[in-house]
Every structure is written in structure tokens, then in C-alpha cells.
Image 1 (tube, rainbow, N blue to C red):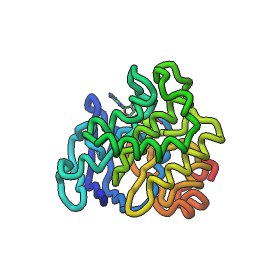
Image 2 (image 1 turned 30 degrees about the vertical axis):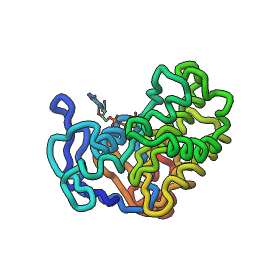
Image 3 (image 1 turned 180 degrees about the vertical axis):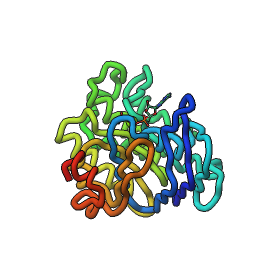
Image 4 (image 1 turned 120 degrees about the vertical axis):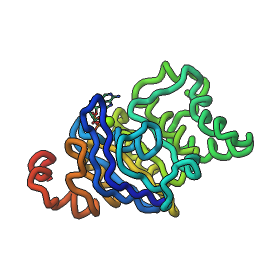
Length: 231
Ligand SMILES: Nc1ncnc2c1ncn2[C@@H]1O[C@H](COP(=O)(O)OP(=O)(O)OP(=O)(O)O)[C@@H](O)[C@H]1O
Ligand SMILES: [Mg+2]
């Protein structure tokens, strides 16, 4: 799915927290969104995924200024785990159930994705009793099983150990196969280097710099980026 943003403004209590002139998200790529706390990363992905309204501007999905025809092709895993007070297994399949997936499809998808993490012994445990990193794996799987064309992941590995982080990155790469697109918010520059085709650096609600990950993460135009992120 191709998403184009034109002059997007989002305000909270009269304060502009997002001010994006132009942004295009292309098919078949992994995007890394980076930026300091409060720079607008989570707000941006919530606006694009239709979870919160914005004040001005336009967002086009495959050229149409209407999210409804593509809503089911977009999924978002928000910051923090937000798991339900149900078993791990029920959490992993809740999105599929909401989308009225058949029992066969649920079995096929869970078999396919559960192997990314060693969660077998947790499946019947209440998700609220998991550790932070375990919960993060469940949250990521809950989104992965949907196999949406466009997926937003807000700091998916923030509480994972290094081994699990690498497994999650393998999964994220798989989620972007074919024409699918994954947008990952991260504070981890090394992770962005490992997984992003394109990166977007945000600062105070604006896009400070964007472009090929290899270029921007190794030799950004902005002196501010070089200094603050030690690039
Ligand atoms: N529901 C809300 N009500 C009021 N202000 C909000 C709300 N959500 C976000 N903000 C403000 O909007 C700005 C951008 O927040 P956002 O969560 O998008 O930042 P972020 O880049 O994701 O930061 P972090 O790295 O801490 O997750 C911040 O100044 C924040 O305080
Ligand atoms: Mg955030």
C-alpha cells in the first residue's frame, strides 16, 4: 500500500505536535522512525493508521483520501504492550478473531508465527502475568499473524533482550516480504541500521531528515543529527 501525506497538522490542546509537509510510504519497504521523546513518532503512526483524528491536511491511501477501503489492510501495535486480561494464546489470535478469520486460518497463522519466539509454555498463561519482554513478544505476534499490507510497530523490541530482539528483527523482515510495508519506531540506531531500508528522523513534530537508511544513518545532512545521535 502506498501512503502519501500532504500538509498534516495534529494539535493537542492548541499545541501543534505534528506538522508534516510531505511524506510518502512506499510498498515493500521497512521504514525506521527515529527521534527524541515527544517528537511526534507515535502520534504520526496513529494518525496514518486512522486511530486518532488530525486537524489539517490530507492522507492518501493508494491515491484515495479515504482510509475505509484499506482499513483492514493496516495494523498497528502501539507503544507498550496493551495486552488483554486473557491467555497469551487468546491475545495472539484476538485480532484474527475480530477480523472473523476461520479456525483453519487461525491455526495456520499461529503455527507459522509462534516459531519465531519460544512461547509454547506460556500459551495458557494470563498475559497480564508476563514479564515486559515476554509481553512484547505476544504483542508483536498478535500483529504479525494479521499479515497486513501495512504494519506499524511502535518500539516493538524496547523491552526485549538482545537474542529476542534479533528474532523479532527476523520476523519484522519477514513481515515486509513481497509488497508489504512495515514502519518501525525505534530509539535504537543500531536496530535502525540493521532493519530499515528508509529512515525518518523526527524533531518537534516535523521531519528533520529522511532518506535511505544507509545514507542518513551513516552520513546525515543535518549537523544536529550528527551531534545528538552521534552519527
Ligand atoms: N493524548 C495526548 N494528549 C495531549 N498531548 C499528547 C497526547 N499524546 C501525545 N501528546 C503530546 O504530543 C507530543 C508527541 O507525542 P508522541 O507520543 O507522538 O511522541 P513520541 O515521539 O512517540 O515520544 P516517545 O519517544 O516518548 O514515545 C508530546 O509532546 C506529547 O506530550
Ligand atoms: Mg512514542
